[in-house]
Length: 566
Image (cartoon, rainbow, N blue to C red; front, side):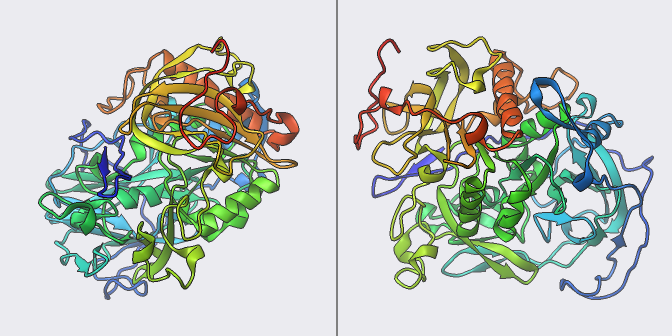
């Protein structure tokens, strides 16, 4: 969904969100609590001593030594880690599903987007319930159940928290809440994507997302959760980077700074933001196959870009739009060193952001003015001005890294195969002109000849589509950097969502039914992961330029030139 700005340019709000209440039983009793080393005290919101009623909890268990992992080659040549296989063979449950909550019935946020082993996480909860419990679920495959219950905290005293603040001028919404609970990431928390299920005594329930990472990991694959995009679209409190809530002043009244110190709304997948629409299907696919994988967020790439060199492949998911300079330069340097990049969505690395600290901690405020002249750094530090990456005052189009760039929204239809001989199509029986059905949409990327795309770009799918700006073309692409890694981009924002493979085991109302495109997209994804996990793409699959068959050299338009016989 998009807004047309007054200057005729496009601003988009694209979600794979499915509003509404989710099914699933809420259980308040009969759960084995795994709480240890409780400490209570007095205090407030500060990261110092725990607040009144606050709990510090650590759990027992065995942390998988992922940095010294046992890995073997599995089906399709995938790197299979024993700990991932063992983890997903453990009993799963559908108890992670929530019954839902009215707005502000129960909601919360944590003080970091991810936590490493040994770190303490602080949870802030607002609820009308007198008490609540917290169930921590690790999301994965788990024999089709989707998650495993790792531990439970509580009951914790409930409270109605102070009202949020709104900073004039930048319209930043932030919650000066009191800490409800703190817990340490102990031995029973394997690396992964987690949902903290808040369950009030009154039956209201909602999720809070958290990634548990392993900074010592040398896993072949690191999956990046796009929390910067989640926060950009977060309308909790009435403002986002796209505008204001109902009755507001729209785009001109948007936030220029958004804070992670606030929940995600109850009507946005019950507080889980874009996790289920644009991320979980890939997590479940990789864990089902036991892939040697670890997890982090955009903020982690920003803070520790050097850790990317520990891995062979970075996977960004369905809508990874907001990148900082540190993220961009870190990914670019890693690509030079042989790390491969997989962009499973579209519209990635399109908005330039920077971060600031909040009272809760570092990098908790995300700055993005979008209009360069509004940014206080304009004319002073143009390299950090938060306009779109392709725009001035220091334009660096994302296609220089990805190969293709954001074109428009409103696309729909099939991806049309243009280079069936590529390794990405192995085992799919696709031929040139063949179609991957109903997987193009809504936002999409294209090759633009006048932009600084790599000269050896290989177009894998070349797909005409309608759009909000008129007829256009979406491109799936691949290229390798000389002596370095490879970059694969699907060119469509719908890709990850189509990886949902629910055989009926999961009672998930927002999961689309599997189709032929599900199996094809899954095979292509696994083909890329398998080959990129071997080492630098330039070594195993050097790209061969073919964009000239589809676009006129030097053309500044998006009008495609069809290849003979295509």
